[in-house]
Length: 312
Image 1 (cartoon, rainbow, N blue to C red):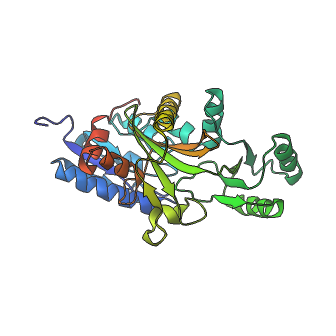
Image 2: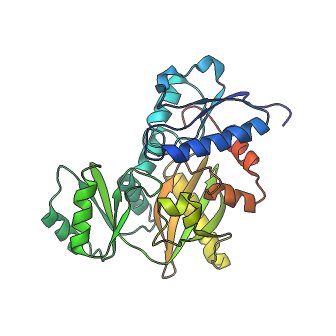
Image 3: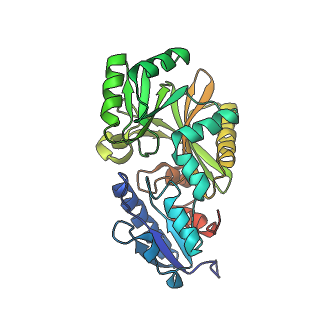
């Protein structure tokens, strides 16, 4: 590009969520990429300074490299819009809805996108007997997955193979989180799809060495998951999962880049969740999918940046 749409870029990274470490790594990688592309880059960590201390006069656009609470759930986005600075990735409402696993699953069901059977649990209304009745009523079979409704990177995710273990873990998680989601565990292949600016980029298959694709499997080399790119699917099924991911991106009103997580079981795709701020680390999936499709990391980061806007 001879003339850049934006010149002075603020990379927002770090934050206060449980995914701070991953965000710092993502942000640093994006800063390096943007500098290679000759942008003037500065950084901002909302753990150190409040969002309202961003000096907008020196910023043409924000590259949002935050993950987790306050960065991926609409909070940061609301500040960016208040400051009227163009920013990357999804907007306030789509970020909030996508981050909230209950709301997003309700939208999946409404739009006929298959997702595992589930029920929501709130700390104030928690009763073991009520949950047992719902499990029976919804015919949710063990193993059962229990997780916070608004965490990422598989933080707090547990798989329970019996009732005793399930209620022990629910009580333990409710000490830290107000809201949980319980869903039926789906076996089969783990497939993840990247969508950029509304267009599917590709699907990758994950074969974890651990029991499932948890935080350690995602971010530690010693527990590194096997990545199969492209995913081992028939041409027909590969095209199908790309189509579902594209529909999911659109249904939730997402912008920029997203990564949708699926299980392929008994010839059907079940969406688990959609991520509006996918990781951009060396072990992250979106850069790997992009690379396979001839898009370098630097070009991927610039492509995300060039889509930045206000009121997303």
